[in-house]
Structure formats: C-alpha cells, structure tokens
Length: 279
Ligand code: 3HC
Image 1 (cartoon, rainbow, N blue to C red):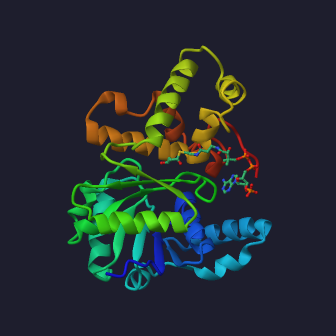
Image 2: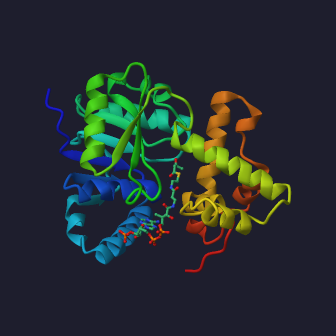
C-alpha cells in the first residue's frame, strides 16, 4: 500500500487549524483549509499572509487553498485533520460525514487533546484509519505532536501519521494509552490547577504568579498568559469534555475560568482574558 500523503485537508480555520494547515503547506504538501465560515477563512488567510511575509515565506501559501467547499476537498484528500470544536456530538457527526465522502484510503485524525479517537472511530466505517494527532499552540512554532491511537487503529495508520508529522518538521511522540489530556496537557494542567488555586486563595496576583513561572522557573510564559494564548474558551471546553468522560467533579473548569468564559473574555482572540490586549 502506498502511504504517501500528497494532499492534507484541515477542518476548522481557527487558531489551531489555520496554523496546522500552514505548517503542512510550508512542508511543500498540497493543503486545503476548510471552514463553514468564509469570515474565519478570510481572517486566517490575512493572519497567515502577514506571518509568512515577515518570515519571507509567502510562496508557501501557493500550496494552501482556503475554501468553504469541504466535501470537494475531502473527496480528493489523503488525510483529514479535524481541528473543530471540542464537542463529541459534533465530532461524531462530522466524522460520519467525512467517512461517507473521503476515498477509502483516507486517514481521518482529530487534533483534540481530550476527546480520544475510540469515541469517534465507530462513527465511521474505517476505525483502523482514525486516531488523534495533537498539535500545540502556536502550531507554527511548537514542535511536539502527540500521536494517540485507539486499540483498533492500524500500525500502518500510526506509521503514516508519524511520518507526516516528521515531514511537517515536528517531533512526534507516541502516547500509548488513551487518557484525556494525553501527556503534555496533563503536565500543563497540574501547573495550571495550582496557579488557579494560589490566585483564588489570594496568595498572589495572577501577574505575580506568571512572573514566578517566567523568572523563577524560566517558563517561556506564565500559566495565566498561556491560558490567554490558548483561549479561555478552549480551556473551559476541554475541562467540560474531560468531565463528561470521567464524571469526576475535579475535572470541571475552575470557577475562575467559568467566570471569564461566561463574560466572553476568551483571551487574546477577544482582546481580554486574564490580561487586556490592544489591537
Ligand atoms: N503564532 C505563530 N507564531 C508565533 C506566535 C503565534 N501566536 N507567537 C509567537 N510566534 C513566533 C514568532 O513569530 C517567533 O518566530 P521566529 O523566531 O521564527 O521569528 C517565535 O514564535 C518566538 O516569538 P517571540 O520572540 O515573539 O516571543 P517568545 O520568544 O516569547 O515566544 C512563544 C512566544 C513561542 C508563544 C513562547 O512564549 C512559548 O513557547 N510559550 C509557551 C507556549 C505553550 O506552552 N504552548 C502549549 C500550549 S498547550 C496546547 O496548545 C494544547 C492544546 O490542546 C490546548
């Protein structure tokens, strides 16, 4: 079987999807970025163009097509990387639709860090070609990609996805058990949980907790700055998704996160999260 990936389709033109698509295009792979919203695609194109112009790599955009015509892209693709919302019902419906349209050899992966692929694979008729391929924000910069297979994923699929991650200039790591959060987010959550508790207990301001992380531990940014980068909405929805899987109240979003989420303060993308942003 020829496992070469010649065409990547990314679903969802948000922060993650747009940068994942750009990484594939930069690797010289023909890539399509698709979203139901033309506005989201236009925004993604604008942001990517500005970044590529700064880096002198605008030419790579020639490998990237932006379209709302998902079905036409999926009908000619070798792999679909889903980077849509963290909602199990939406993902299951989406994967069933993709399964009906994609050629038989096409691999279907999700970028989810919490919804494991065994909860989605049975919505398709190709469970052996379904797994998680989890990138980190900002995907253009962060090297790690977690490859997480479910028990029915074929070795062929694992190998192809791993090879693709390497071709995209990433460092794939193999996560051997399907646990929510996988490896990196488990580490991150432990730090974030402690940071939120210190803040809620009035031990220090969130700015000072961030300062401790950056100046005492040399983290590139503090946990509150990172939540604003990733998106308060994403942090909230990931916790909710984990709670749905574990049923453990400890998985629920911290009340301080819920407060920001309900106020629409999603972080950098809305101009205000923990911090306020200009422009
Ligand atoms: N998008 C794309 N590229 C970005 C970017 C962004 N939002 N922010 C910064 N960059 C690029 C810059 O263009 C620059 O690239 P260059 O060196 O090729 O010119 C490079 O990153 C470094 O940027 P800066 O010098 O401006 O700033 P820093 O040195 O402070 O780096 C950072 C910025 C890379 C974001 C760094 O602060 C960092 O690594 N932060 C931690 C990020 C992190 O932990 N991510 C994981 C989040 S968890 C996750 O994604 C999982 C999910 O499931 C929620």
